[in-house]
Length: 77
Image 1 (tube, rainbow, N blue to C red):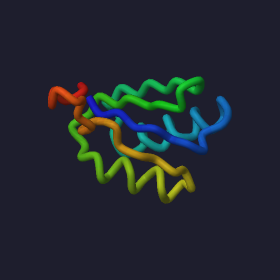
Image 2 (image 1 turned 180 degrees about the horizontal axis):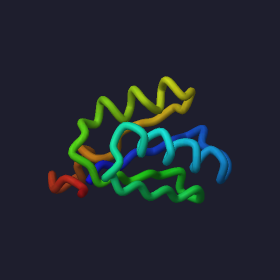
Image 3 (image 1 turned 90 degrees about the horizontal axis):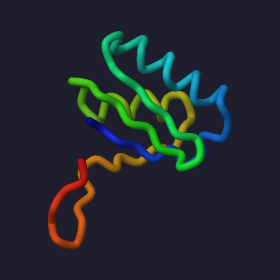
Image 4 (image 1 turned 45 degrees about the horizontal axis):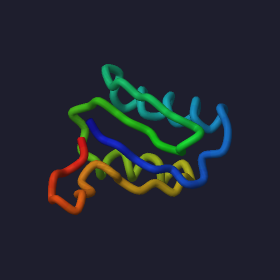
């Protein structure tokens, strides 16, 4: 599972546009978006870079959260 923070995602229309764009490149992807936290999770075989590029092309500022590690060095999943 990949997780992203999308800082300039501000409304449900933004979220829907993002979901549609990701589904266009990966029909079987499971996309969940939480507008309150500005976080998106994607269950996909796609590489993180492809999703970041797609979001950037749409004008969204996204940061991958998938590989951030905690102080005890256990990575978030």
